[in-house]
Length: 311
Image 1: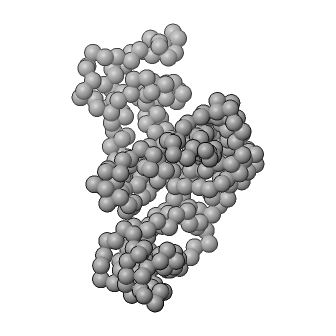
Image 2 (image 1 turned 90 degrees about the vertical axis):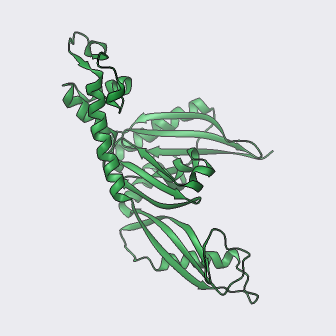
Image 3 (image 1 turned 90 degrees about the horizontal axis):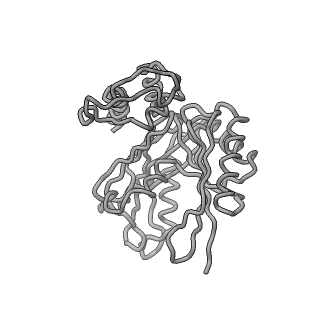
């Protein structure tokens, strides 16, 4: 039975995470181990300190190797951050075969044509060219045109790009940490394929991934991604607001948020409290848990409003 080891690496603003999985033919993917390290060299998804990021990757990968019991040689890297941009493009080609049957080569040529229509920016690196729909002559909204007959093939694509400098810095950190970047993927796209069902993607769904520095999203309808994007606000800003409201250091505010946080103030009884002595010895202050939820609710509303504008 053939099998292979797959390792995923996500370099986020708050943490660097590595997951090792085993894929066997005819069996579900099996998670072997994982590793997490604090991310000190990343701001809003962008690497700002090469040395700190390399050290974090090494620590995360080493922990994943210990828990999985296998050596990690290459990784699939998740790409995100505020430098991501998303656009659309169309490509049109004539069907090449004499009998007018559309072949996989015709599809590849149509996607290449769509890429050729994109305005070239030397500071941008294309991550994905994702077909959203096809058109064969006058028939629209085709998911898979291979095998159909027609004279003209048209494709509508979703293009995900990142800055060249950010992309090169990411690859450099991975390689200098001692592993090879086997391939890369836009982070919320990978998350969507991991957690969304086929029916959800058919009916229409938005996946929102709220990270430490940014929140990224992807929208599916009729099984294909229609739109994606990144908004420059994340969970760290929630933590900062908690630190200000509760008059405590940021690391303590993060612990409070994780232990007692919620985003629906009206559902929390007024009598429930957060005692600071639980987190800081000799600290006598007591706050209403509803007050914590109000802080979180306000910042999440900001995130949702930004995403709504994108939509």
